[in-house]
Structure formats: C-alpha cells, structure tokens
Image 1 (cartoon, rainbow, N blue to C red):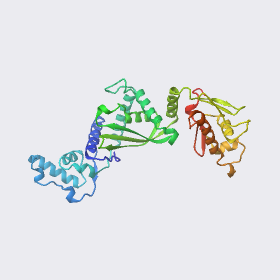
Image 2 (spheres, rainbow, N blue to C red):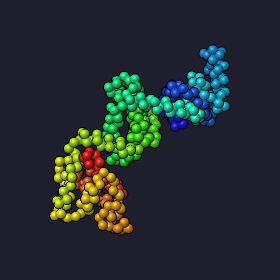
Image 3 (cartoon, rainbow, N blue to C red):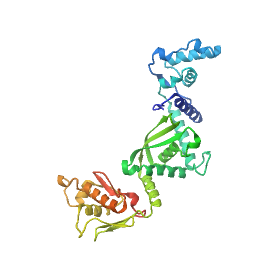
Image 4 (tube, rainbow, N blue to C red):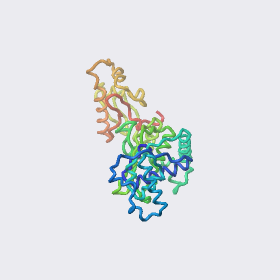
Length: 339
C-alpha cells in the first residue's frame, strides 16, 4: 500500500475503494492513512469556507469542519478522506499512505489472499466466462506474453512484464494479469520482486508492470510451449566426424576437413551436458587452456557468435546458443524433451 502512486484523483479513489472492499472481506479495519504533504494554505483551503459549504446541512457542515481539523493534524482515516474528497478532489494527491497493521490483521490479510488464490488455482472463482478464465488457460496467456517479448533470450530470468487493461470492459481480453502472477508465485514458478500500475487517461486504460524472476519450472513450461508449436525446430544432435549440427531439419557445417575450430570445441563441450550452463573457465579448461590465460579469455564468446551465425544462415534462428560473455548453453527450448 505504501507504494501506491496513482496519476489522477479518480484512480486514487478506485484504489481506495478496492482496498476497502478487500480489507472488509478479510475482516480487517482500514488502517490510519498516515500524513499529508506540506501544502500551502492557499491551495489546501481547509477548513472550507461558509460559501463552499452552503449546500450542505448543518450536521454535514459540522462533520466537514471536524474532518478538516483532523486532516490538518495528521489524524485522519478513510472516513475523513472520503468526506473531504467531496470538496477537495486533489486531496488524494496530497497524502502519504503509511499503514500500520497489527500482526493479527496481517495474518488475516495473508490468509484472505491465500484462500483467494487457491480458489483461482482450483477454478472456483465466479467469472463471466468460465471456459476462458480457468487458471490453466490464464497461465498459457501469460506464457505467450513471455514468449512474445522473447524475455529469456533478451533479459534472462529476471525481467519486467506488463499488461494493459481498458476502462471499457468490452475491450479487454479477459486476461487476469495480477491473478495469474500471484498464482504462479504461489506455485513457485516465479518470484515477484515488485508490481506497480500506471494510468493512460488519454486512452482510458491502466498498465500493470511486474518485475519477476522466472524459476526453472516456469522456464521449462515456456520452452515446452515453444516445442509444442515448433516440433521441427529441435536440436537432433551433432555429427562429430563431419562437424555438423543437425538442427531444425538442416545440417549446419561448422568447419571443413574436420578442422577443430573454437566453434567445434564449444559444441563438443556443450553436448556433454546440454541442459546446464557452462561457465567460461569450465569451457577453457575443457579445451585444454589454463584459467589464467588472458589470450584465451574471449575465445568462448566469439565461438558462440560463430555457431549462432552459422545456424542463422541456414535456419534464420539466431539464438541456438544461449549465452553472454561468461556462461553458455544450447538454448533449452531447442532440446528434445526426453534429453
């Protein structure tokens, strides 16, 4: 809650309404809000003037003035905020949310969220299209988002993923981004480092962002999804006699006359244990170099580039070797499932 930074008053109000409902479901009172920024008196204009309150009843006026005094003393809650919001729309932008929950309340909130995610995982939520909003289908949509942005190839296991949601419900796809994210977290498929939201008022939509770390089980699912849709794009093996990679229905020659180039050495090392990363010093040692040999330090990187260039010329695929400057492996999405 302390990281809520909406871009407009309406979005802030929506956020508070959402929090209020969910805290009620968890049987937890809305906490004291915290404090407000040091706003100049001429902008704050509290307590409100008599003219600003002329359309209110005497009782409402009394409550409005009392709420103003509590707000200015940093002693206000949701009731005062909602009341003052009627005459000061900008009040939502002026406050800090610094909630302090009792330990018992924290446990209630955690249990409420946990039960809700369990219901989602077990397809027990009330939804408008049950055939689509099952967890398995939602997971597949999430996987497609990861694949479409080439997340692992570009960023590795730690990356930011986003999702847009329109105010007009009919324009939305029915994809439950945050539901799926936290369900994957509960299953230990991903670690969620941070989640936040922005709003595009011009196009009437919200955009959610999440910084996540994909765990091995989720990476395997993404790779499996790719293989199901691309059954022919598989590494079939390596012909050591002729230095030929058999991949995606093609034979890719790495060197002529059985010459043992660095590209050849790299493949021969990687196929010994194709499912794991090989680190630079391991490869150099496997090739017969000493780890202190500065002249050999970049040989693995350029060998991986050479292999990927050769594969790309034959297949159009440029990520056969998944690597950076220090670790290397055959991209797991191209490996046979039973290897």
